[in-house]
Each structure stands twice: as structure tokens, then as C-alpha cells.
Length: 256
Ligand code: NAP
Image (cartoon, rainbow, N blue to C red; front, side):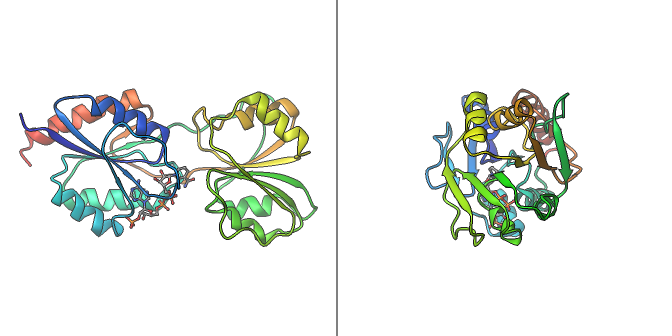
């Protein structure tokens, strides 16, 4: 039996879980693609390829060369470029595309959220008066906050922010989630944080700081995701497995 070939664009817990689910099936050959940003990436349950493809054209060529039957974009909700490339490449190569994107967090009673649409807008939302800011948006866009050097920043990321911020009052914390609520409460207290900046990433691994902020009555500036329309979408790994089977079946029927 010819195995159906799946390429998963990853870099998220969901991508790893989905790869584990699909990778154990004898009818599927699954490869997981990572950008190669993290210096010490987590172990993955299927073969991994690492590094950029060279834009949408490079990804299109990869799909053709490796005879991929299904492309699954399970990248982070804020990884905009690779998702745009996936849409372009899949359409050009005639390969079905499934987007796995976990739901964002919804405010509950006690949350004090300010919604913004970009990291730049989050900088402005901090205001002019100096504040003690917990910056939990990852390292790639942390330098945007150089535009507001009056604040104290506690920057937490998996890998070091390099080059570091130019703002004068910055403390760096290297850590990889998941983060327990009690630890987040302790961190916010000991560092005397008075506002948190976070992306609305959704999921459990980084939700602890949101619960901690609620418990302490602290405001959160929440960067919302870009709105996109994908034809085939799943919000959970379970859902993605079902969609993947459906797409593989209809793709074969069309005889492409
Ligand atoms: P991005 O801005 O959307 O992508 C920039 C470029 O990185 C892409 O054009 C592509 O290069 C390459 N790339 C990204 N993801 C890739 C993948 N899974 N496999 C191969 N190449 C990939 O992406 P990003 O925001 O830098 O995120 C990079 C990775 O970190 C992603 O895998 C994402 O899931 C993960 N991540 C991102 C965030 C976040 O907040 N953005 C948070 C947690 C994890 P080419 O054009 O050369 O193909």
C-alpha cells in the first residue's frame, strides 16, 4: 500500500501532538517542518526537516518534489508569513491545505484586558507614565518596546533576546512553558509587575499568567490574532485528524 504523504508545518504543541497521532498510522508518512528558531527544540515523534523553504515558491517546490498529498499548517497563530506562504504554495501545487489553529482565550469575569491588533499598538497602549511591564510575547518582537524606554521590562522568552533591548531598564528571564499559576503569581508579585503584555495565543501552556493577572487584579494588554479565512480549519488535534482523513479521501477521489 502506498503511504499518503503529509507535511505538517509546526513549531507548536498542537503540531507535535498531531504528528504523534498521524505518525503512528501505517497508511501515512508524516514529516514535521520546523523553522529552526529554537536553539534546543523539543523532541518530536516523527521525522523532522528544519529551516525555511525559501518563500512560497520554495514550499511549492517542496510539495511537488516530495509528492505531498496533504499540507497541514499547524504553526503558531501569530506566525503570519509561513501561513500566508502555505496558502499560496498549496493553491499553486494543487495540494489540499488544512489549518490547525487553537482558539484564542476569552475574557471571563475579573479579567482587565485591553485588546490591541499589533505589538506596536501594545507599546502605545502602555502609555507615557513609567510602568513595570511583564513582556511575554516571545523574543522576536520584544525589541519593538525600545520605542517606550521609560518602562521597566521583565522579558521572558525560550531563547535569549539577541540583540538585547536598548531600553535601559530590562530584566531577562529564560524559560519554557508550561507555567503553573502559582509560579506566575509569585513572579508577578516579586517583580512588582503592574501590567502584562501578551499575545492572545490560546491554549493552556501560557494561560497561567492570564489567570495570575486576574487573581492579582492586574491589567493585560492582549495582542489579538490577525483575521484570516481558511477553507479547511480545525481547532483541536482531534478535529484535525478527522479533517485530514476527509481531505485525503476526497483528494484521492479527484484523482489528482
Ligand atoms: P513567520 O514570521 O510566519 O515565518 C517567517 C519565515 O520562517 C517563513 O517565511 C519561513 O521561511 C520560516 N518558517 C516559519 N515557520 C516555519 C516552519 N514551521 N517550517 C519551515 N519554515 C518555517 O514565523 P515566526 O512567527 O517567525 O515563527 C517561526 C516558528 O516559531 C513557527 O514554526 C511558529 O509556529 C513558531 N512559533 C511562533 C510564535 C510567534 O509568536 N510568532 C510563537 C511560538 C512558536 P521561508 O519563507 O524561507 O520558507
